[in-house]
Every structure is written in structure tokens, then in C-alpha cells.
Amino acid sequence: MSRQQFGFLAGFLAVAVWALAGAGVAALAVLAGLLGWLVVRVLDGDLAVTGLGDRHADPRRRR
Image 1 (cartoon, rainbow, N blue to C red):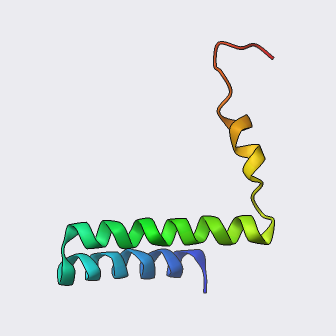
Image 2: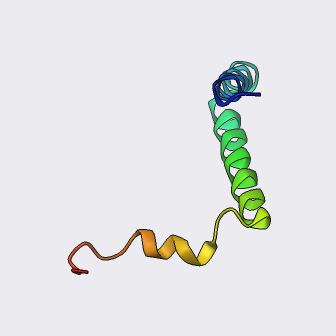
């Protein structure tokens, strides 16, 4: 499945949940999906949790 197809499917499912159950449930479903994606990335080693802090360094600090 390509990224475009996956994006379409994710968007379609979010709108379908929204239409069937309401906006709050759809937002929770999207949030749960993002959290699951993040957990799998960390477990696979594709994302280092310790490296996340380095991305948001103090902008006043010069390197």
C-alpha cells in the first residue's frame, strides 16, 4: 500500500467514524491511532525517545 493510499484510507475512516459516532469519538480514534503509530515506531527502533528533546532546543542558544 502506497503512502497516498494509506493517507486516503486514514482520512476516509476518520470521516466515517465522525459521521457515525460524532466528532469527539473521531478525534479520540485519530489520537489513539497516532499514539499506536508512535509506540510501534519506538519499539521498532525507528524513533529514539531521547532524541526528541534535541529537536526542540532553546532558539536563543547558539550552536
